[in-house]
Image (tube, rainbow, N blue to C red; front, side, top):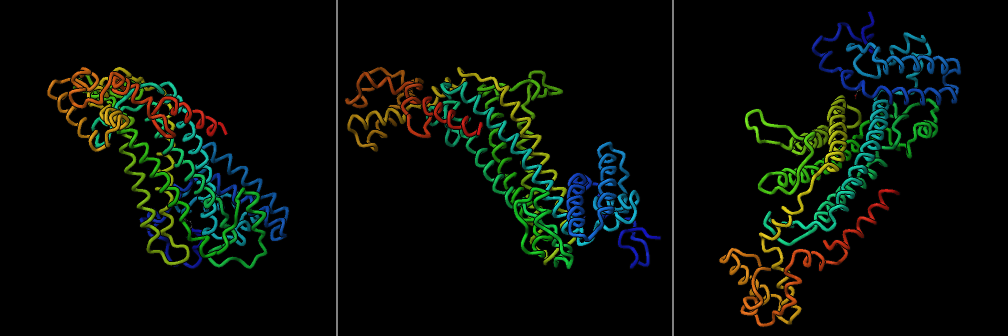
Length: 459
Ligand code: ARG
C-alpha cells in the first residue's frame, strides 16, 4: 500500500502525529497557482528538449487546467498524507492523466520546485505591496497639499520646538515610505532569480534549458550554484527586513495619530469607521486601527527574527527547516497589505483641526529660535542671542504670555538691538515662511516637494 510519494522504502506508516507535524499543505496550498505555473514551464521545456513527448505535455497541460479550476472553485481535495502542495498537485495530476503526470518531475526536485514557487509568490506579493505603498504615498501628498500652510508645533523630545507646517510633517512620512519602495524594488531583483534546474542540490544530468524556463516565468536571472539555489532564503529575509522597516514607519505614524487624536492634543480626528467605542465609557472614541498597526509591527519584526534564526545553523544544502519559512513570510505580506490598504483610506479621512495645532505651537515659545536668529542678524553672536532669548522666555513664563505678546519696550529692555520689525519673526507663520531652504518647512518649499513627489508617483 503506497501511502506517500516516497514510501516504497519504508516498513511502517508514518506516525500520525509525525504526519501532522511534518505536513505543510495546510499553509503551502497558497502556493498552488505558482506551483502549477512553474510545473507548466518545466513541462514545456522538457517537451522542447525532447525529454518528454508532446503528448505527455498535452496531457500535463490538460490535467493542470482541471486542477487549477478545482482549486479556484475550492473543490480540490487537499490531503494531509500527501504532505505538501507539490505532492498533492502531482498526485492528482497522475490520477487525472496517468503516466504523463509521473513524468513531470523528471530533472526536478521539490527542493528547487519550492524555492521557485516561493520566489514567484513573493514577486507577486511585492508588486501588490508596491501598489498600495504608492497609493498611501499619494494620499499623504494630497493631505500635505491641503495643509501646506497649516501651522503646527514641531517637536523634539516631545517638547514644542519650532513651528512647522502639517504638510511638511506629513511629507516626512512620504520620504520614509519612498525609501521603503526603493528597498522593495531592490529586494525584488534578488527574488527574481530562477532556482529550477538545481534539482535536489547538485544539478541534473538531463539537458534542461534553464534559460527558457526563466524566460517563460519572467525571471531576470538564473541562480548560478545549485547548492545555493535550493538553500538560499536570503531573499525572504530581505523582504521581511524591508517589511519590518515599513511597519516601523507605519508604527511611528500610528503613534502620532493616536497622540494627535487624544483630547489633550486635539489636532486631528479620525473617521468613525476607523475607531471603536468603549463598552463602559460612553464618551470614548478609540483609534483602534493605528493602535493595532503599531501592535502588529511586533509580529512583523518577529517574523524577521524567526527567519534569521531559522537560517543561522543550517548546513548546505536543503533542510526541512526551510519549510518553516512560509508562515512568517505569508503573514508578513498579509499584514503589510492590509495595513497599508487601511492607512491609505484612513489618512485620506483625517480631519485636521488647524486652530488647535496653531494654539499648541503658540503655547511653547516655538519662535524662540527665530528671536535669537533675529538678534544675530542685528549683530549679536549666536551664543549671546541665545542667552537673551532664554531671559525673554523666563519673563514670559512668569507673566504667562507668549514671546509675541511682549511689548516692544519689554523686548528692548532685554536688548536694545530689538526694533519693531521683530514682530514679523515672532509670529508662527513668519517663522515657518522664513525657513525657505531646500528641505525646509516653508509652505513654498512644501509645495515644491509636492510637485516633485507627484511627478515621481505618476512616473
Ligand atoms: N514542503 C517542503 C518545503 O516547504 C518542500 C520541499 C521538501 N523537500 C524535501 N526533500 N522534503 O520546504
